[in-house]
Image (cartoon, rainbow, N blue to C red; front, top):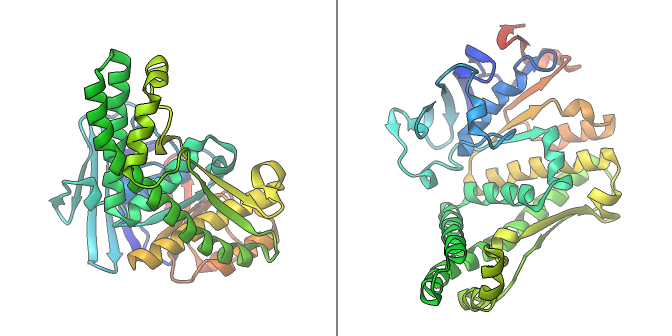
Length: 356
């Protein structure tokens, strides 16, 4: 898959822009705060309508505007030339593919895979378990619509169980919700375990190319609870009811899972150098892109937001070795890359983009 063009209106500090992105390598150059990351953020919406920079969707519209709009033209392995439109103004966002409205998110998520690399990825190491769950859930949801639906139904069910706990719901009401929730919890547990195994295998190969060392990247699934079959969760929640009623929330289940990232020398968060941590995050994102390509039969686009300059020369060279030529790369930075002649270049200032 490749982006051909983007038309963007009232997004962050960008009032309007229309850009040709049809080259294999596109570079956005400018000082900090000019709009480079904003454009990459808009491109990143096409996978799951989620920003890689914030969960506050209201922050995406330009100050003083009612909403934003984005129109993308893409070349796609399964559809040829495709036009994708995202409209966000007041009510729920509207998504159209070749003029037809997308009704279900499960029919859209993962269809247009892009992978962002940014300095914020370090939060996958240094942040809360929720950061790591969001990464893994987006990865698995993009690969499998059934997982996405199970995850969506599980979170809706947990929210309703919490409401019953706080409002003094009866034992019968809780039993009914727990019986409905249990199959979703079991499916999520199985898919997360399988997904981590698949991603770990790709990550090891990518990291060897990136670091040329034997630091041994490790990715493991740390389930909050682990059992055999839906009945395990149903019985677990039944045993937990007294404690959960006191707290007013469901304390056990996949919504409390975590994923451990590390190197063979120990936890990357605690023991890895800054360079090793950044290298591990870049390797994880490239591994995610490779997994998308293998499972979806679609070559994803890499959005590289001013991170290559943060890598040491060895790891920067390793990134290019690990990154297949078939990937379209749209990158940003404060200076043009050394091989600038290979890139289609835009200079960015004040939300405006100038070719060259």
